[in-house]
Image (cartoon, rainbow, N blue to C red):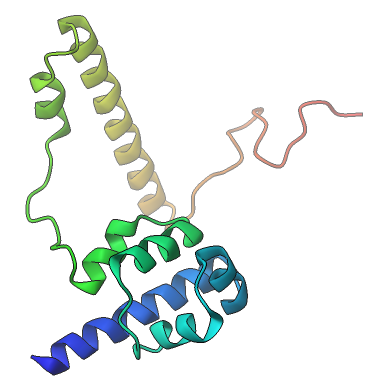
Length: 147
């Protein structure tokens, strides 16, 4: 039991370090943004300290990630056990008109179809996504006004 708890805190610290590295943030910068001391944050990252929910919230805010993700990793919150059905939730929302519910469902389903098509195209291209915007369309690096 104690080993499981120690492993959880160690994993939490590794996750915080990974998120800090992804954000290209130094330990000192994160400690400043989170409002905790540099040595304390270092101990958290190494799994030596067990931060409170409030400290985790400050760290999450500084990393620009959800505090819930840190709470789950720390064992403060349980992972969600069920998936949410967005369409059922839209249909259940009585604050929307019937036309609004239908519109939201159509938009949601169109996004899902678009993502499925993109995933299928990526798989067909060996995982490479076309970011050029198509032939004749400006891509993200193209300028709209050329000299």
